[in-house]
Image (cartoon, rainbow, N blue to C red):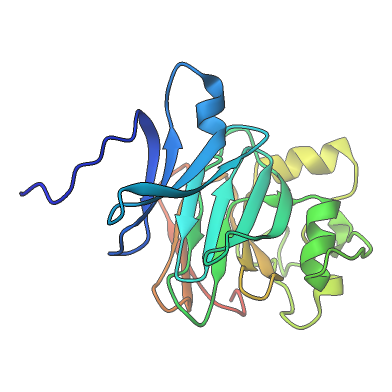
Length: 238
């Protein structure tokens, strides 16, 4: 092992590198709680920050590819254009208590900006992704989740072209919310087009690990039980 670079930029909780470039995304870690809410884009070649963004709550993860920066908070996912750091969309989400808020995978492909994460979209988050422009749409009910068996893994899918019928969120019913919180739902969003690819019931227990292959054609998931790995094809979610 050899030391390639060393930077004095204060206490850091999260470091994310853009492939093998000089661009780093840093989240602070100090006695001041506000440092966990600030994202710093750092250029190691120039040894300076390029920009700083403050968020309303703690940052749990940052992911980057050649076109997008994704910042994960407890109840929101922020999508930015990498070149300008312009905010493109904010996804409101509901997470099961047992799921890591930072669990996600951003595809490295220049053709597909798929973001996979275990979540249930709220009405506002679903509406924005349906049109890509933040417009409204009817919220689908829990009864719209179709399966050949009762909530069998792999049974929830979305038509990539018809986002109006995508089953992504249950109505405001306590029993439905309780069921959803215990299931291993994974949602895939295209961060390039700001379209919802689909939501799949990957496991009967909460998801603990997931990843996409480099070309964005395969999604692999595992639950908290850790006994089964499932593979799904994208964008069909089969």
